Structure formats: C-alpha cells, structure tokens
Length: 62
Image 1 (cartoon, rainbow, N blue to C red):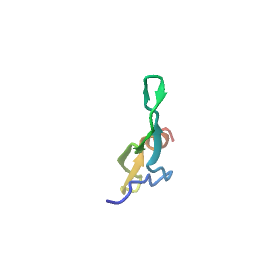
Image 2: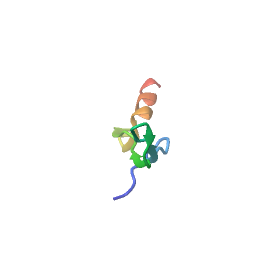
Image 3: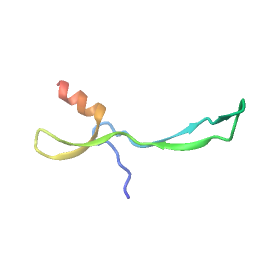
Image 4: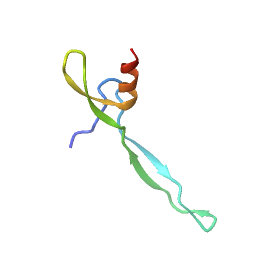
C-alpha cells in the first residue's frame, strides 16, 4: 500500500515513542506510528485530492 501524503503541505506519517511506566520505572518504550487525518477534497477545478484537515480548514478561510 502506498504511503498516504497530503498533496498540499506534504504531511505524512511519523514515528513516536510511548513511555510505559510500571511500578515507578519506565519499561522499554514502544514505537507507535501516527498518521495524519487525510480527507478527500475537491479543488476549485473539480479535481479530487487527499488533504489533511488542517489544510482543508486553511483553504476554507481564503
């Protein structure tokens, strides 16, 4: 499956670490992939693109 990327700003998934605390000590951390909230959006020309919700809100204000 192809990686989902915002066509406007280029935002894509990223890795982050989650600290797991147990009895006062931090266990070895686990890695979690965070994905951007991508939605289908129509441009002014009628073309459909994948854009993150931040970009959709930004274009609605213009």
